[in-house]
Each structure stands twice: as C-alpha cells, then as structure tokens.
Image (cartoon, rainbow, N blue to C red; front, side, top):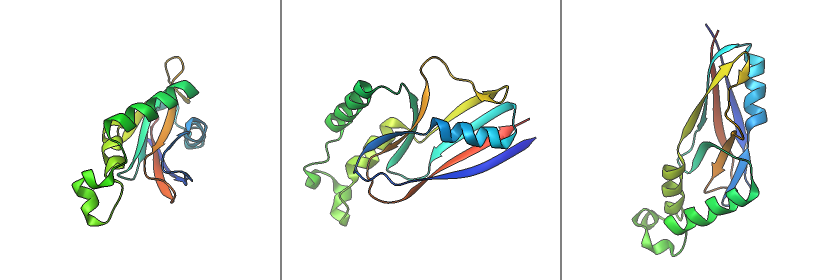
Length: 139
C-alpha cells in the first residue's frame, strides 16, 4: 500500500470563485506512484468546497446565480451567525450545498473520470489563504 498527502494553497482574490484544480490533483497522483487506488480531495475550510463537474463558463455562472438565490449574501443581518461579527453565514450554507470533498478512482495511474468531469475548488468567502488536502491511497 502506498500513500501520498499533499496540500494545495488557495488564495482566491474575490469573495467567491471556482478554480479548476484537476491538473494539481493529477500531479499529486502521478508523484504518488499509485496505479490503482483512490484520491481524496478535501477543501479544508468550512466556507469552501470540493466538487466535480464540467469546466464550462456558463455552468459556473449558473452555479453562482443559483447559490446566491439559495443563500444571498445580503442583507447580512438576516443570518444569526453574522451576529458574531462575521459576514459569511451565506458562505457556510453555500459550502453545505456544494459539498466538502470528492473521491476519484485512480486506474492505471490516472484519474478515472467520466466525460467532461473535472475537480474544482469552490470558494465562498475568499480573500485569504486556505488549504486543500489531496490524499492518494492505493497500490
């Protein structure tokens, strides 16, 4: 059994954004030497997400609009969490919808995706450094 752990540092300059991290995940898998196994990609912050979908600008726009309808940022006073002095309650809710992490099979040393699948980091309260865990386990 082999394993490799790596951390990606994310620093999205805007409050929200989607970053395709597929090539970073592929690099960690390649460096691990694992041919058959799994890779876990975990956004290690409660206002960020790891998810899999298509890398298409219209879809990213639709996500942004849909998430903002589900949990609008303003008015911030509508959220009890923001009574603590924070202004990111909406980011916590958006992360809950988009998910915390993904697991991808590794087959013959490569990510075993379906058509169009890519790994993304979703940021919902950016403008500071956060980490993404990439953990590869297998043979």
